[in-house]
Length: 198
Image 1: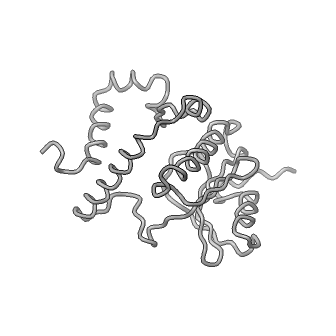
Image 2: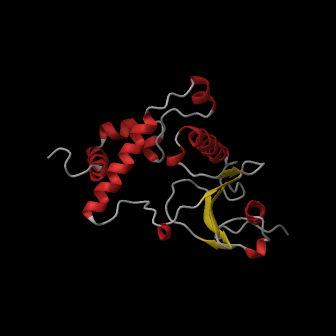
Image 3: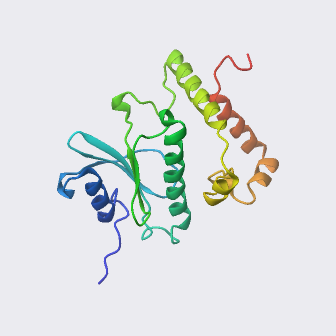
């Protein structure tokens, strides 16, 4: 009788083998912690061994309703874009990134809140303003990068919105539904510094 994959485990054994090889340890030495956030259907975890921790994202096609083609494409895109940005603006991306030979496991440097990294605007207003200003400055710097058209096409870097509004009829939903428009505006206004528009 075939055993179905465990939908609740953080990473598959195959991913743990990749991580162990990356960290140069035995699988039994790995400590795995869950992470929150993300919008893809990938497995995600922080994996530690000794004093090293890496972030792992895995496409597990056994638990996806399809063959995971989109998710595999996203992992490849993440890998290729970060490698490109490491050459152009290394201060804005992970300093280490590895994609497994089969393209199913992406491993990057882990930047945790415990180490002082912020992944969401902090509650304190002055710190939040600095955080937002820093993010905006980084985005403006990255916007200046001119990529060759063939790279844009190869990696499918054209603008894309994930979620319901990213589907073919998403713009129709925004046009027809005042509540969706209001929620979008509210969400984006929360990201702006208070000085804008005052």
